[in-house]
Image 1 (cartoon, rainbow, N blue to C red):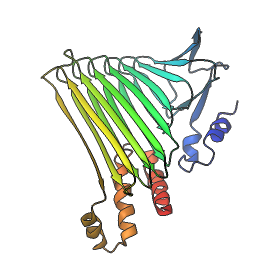
Image 2 (tube, rainbow, N blue to C red):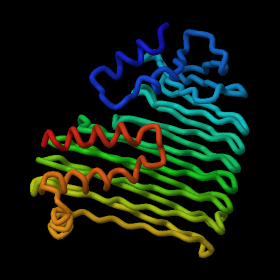
Image 3 (cartoon, rainbow, N blue to C red):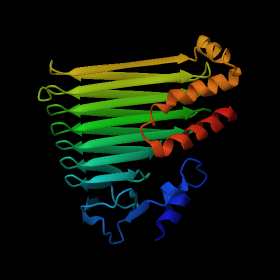
Image 4 (cartoon, one colour):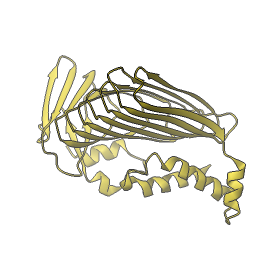
Length: 300
């Protein structure tokens, strides 16, 4: 099966994905033998276990039949894997000791679980540029010492679209670290709901966690429902959270206009910079995402 063609069909009409990035995608299908891992199946649950080593710069895309109810993906110790998330069955990722997963997803209905062993690292980015109605449920367990999860999302929504993201992170071991950063821009009658639950267990001394949800409203009819929550059961931790929802500050726009920009240019520059923090750590995406946001904000 032609991986690029299959993925290209799924991404038809998208302006985000550069061709050189698409060229590095490898399709993993349950009905084909892969040199990268082993497929197995127990009842209606599929399991894919990666081998070691993985070819550098390879990005994996799972294409599944509609029959399984869940896919469990195992990444062995000291292996680094990049996955572009597909809209299919519920998925569980199990990261071995010092394994690393770079995980990228469009805004879509999804149920995702991540289990991180000692020293494992998860780096995630969700992008939603004018998505359809969708709900994302995420569960992350930092099971081993020094496990690290960095979860970032950005949304640009308009019309009457309702988007929801629910993220649950559990610190269960010493010296674990998590960062959750979710930002949205809403126009028209769009609605966005964020629910973040971070729990630091008694066994997770010296852990650090940050959580923030920031939103800008371009229309008085747009709405945000934000609920960032911390559950701290250990006093030897550093934990912060916060949320803010507001229209664009007119004084900020005026300051930019004094530098020679029109009001429309100032607003666009400000909003692109606002969302940029969620993907700045991905240099291969930054320029293209900036352009895409500018084009869509122009369309407004």
